Image (cartoon, rainbow, N blue to C red; front, top):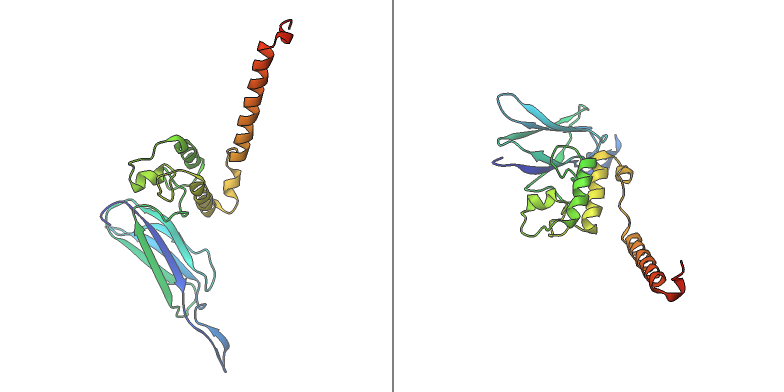
Length: 206
């Protein structure tokens, strides 16, 4: 790598399924539980990420991995069972993460409350003229030049991906747009009533 970037790495077991007289149903895509590891090359190999979340025949995924150091990176694939396993390896390298795969806006390796605060604060920031990475760091996860409900949905997906399903719902929530509208209407009505009471000649004795 010649500069800071993000890697999306997907390891998928592959193979045909067929029936034999001796073995019955045989699934060549489910022969071994694969382990996916990413290392940074150098005088000594440094492990950057490892994943082994699925069982035999399951795909393993390293999403939105920040590659912050210039140099070479190596991928290691191992199987826990002593059987041959064919697989497909897809590697996507980009300046920003694939939309919906990362909520780590401050790039500290975590998707946490600090990133949520950044996302909320960026709602009022002018994003015009910002490059892709700066757009991402200001919560514009689909890089369309705006921080809106589409980005909120992507943030939710990525936050749950990093912290477990339902994790986003534990964050301090913002009022729904409809609720904000009702609050604004109620405030306007109250102010209007107050003005009438102040200026009404029937209320002059109060």
